Amino acid sequence: MSIKPLNPDEIVKMKKACRLAAETLIYIEKYIKPGITTNEIDQLVHDFTLSKGATPAPLGYHGFPKSVCTSVNQVVCHGVPDSTLLKEGDIINVDVTPKIDGFYGDSSKTFMVGQVSDDARRLVEAAHEAMMKGIEAITPKGTTGDIGFAINKFVTRKGYTSVIEIGGHGIGRTFHDEPFVPSIGKKGKGDVLIPYHCITVEPMINEGTEKVKEFAIPSSNIKYYETSDGKLSAQFEHTVLVTETGYEILTLI
Image (cartoon, rainbow, N blue to C red; front, top):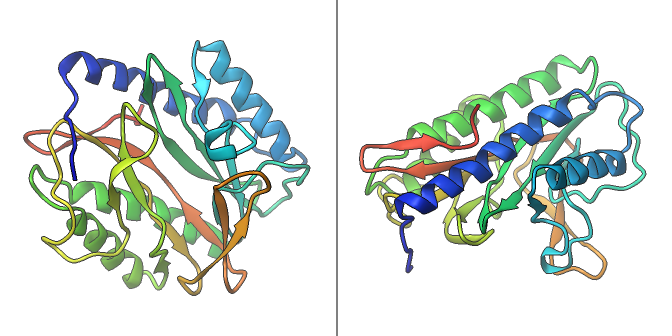
């Protein structure tokens, strides 16, 4: 694994991109209501991103056809916006990645649509806490296994499962970089974390089995995933800068 740490000027640019990702999720939240379509969410995110002088990185990435990923209920990740109407009780993960000044900021949040069931609320809250447990496990010269261990320990104690095949990644000058950041791991195993490199921590937490089904997206190399048992899945994501003393969450406002 060959990683080039960010220099101080690059860190400033990275923070700008990540702040915009956070602002985008704050902006879209007020529109997440019963009756909106995922296509409308995509258009709102697209227009907001352009208005800030950035471009939406997902659009055209390996053929992905939209500017945002919208993953509803049993969709684990990479859901493609379409004419689907959100309804009361749904949960939806909105995953945004603006690119500005050559750097990428990546963040996602699972929103609750109107009044949701207690089961759905508990899952969403657990997904957020699982992400934070993973972030809190970051130490300079620690490993990706430390992150995965902390996430899965919390998730299993809550009675949920962590998706194994899909996880976080390095990010910065490129959208997806090394290392892979798992939601299951062993302490001290995996790739060593490099100070002044950014990673995403983004556990996908399932209500039932951890197994997922893969689906093709037309004209794209990207796949989208659903839970194999049709039960709910929730996810949160932050971009995090590994530092010499610990970490800094860049997509937190």
